Length: 148
Image (cartoon, rainbow, N blue to C red; front, side):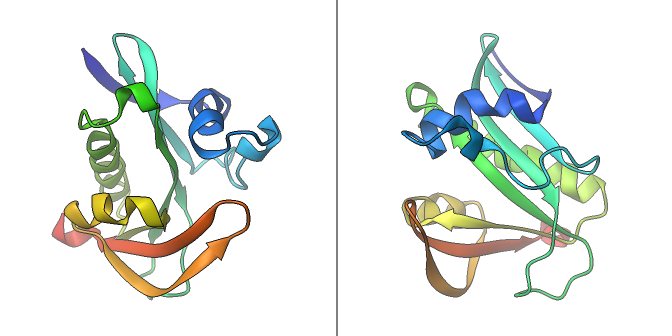
């Protein structure tokens, strides 16, 4: 049985580290704004095991003009739980939370390998691809929440 609930920033590290920061120091799992009162961290649990995580920050991108923008960060599913719809469930949960807080846009920096996944969920690329050192090519992707 799966469930999604709010978790602490520290709780995200058990998934952020092996999926997003393998081989790097655990300190690299801390993101600026993790402990802000407006930031929420969501954990997807499968049979009470933390299987996936996503963090939602109130943070604008210069590519878009809408007033209240939410940035999705640290979206990750442990390998043994991938391809089960958990990523989509987490993204939709984050969208619903942002929309409930009157958000107009949800955006993120998507790894090249994940672009197809996000396009299936209605996200669009804006701007040119860019590299993040030691991680690889990324694209800024977004979705207007009033159409969710």
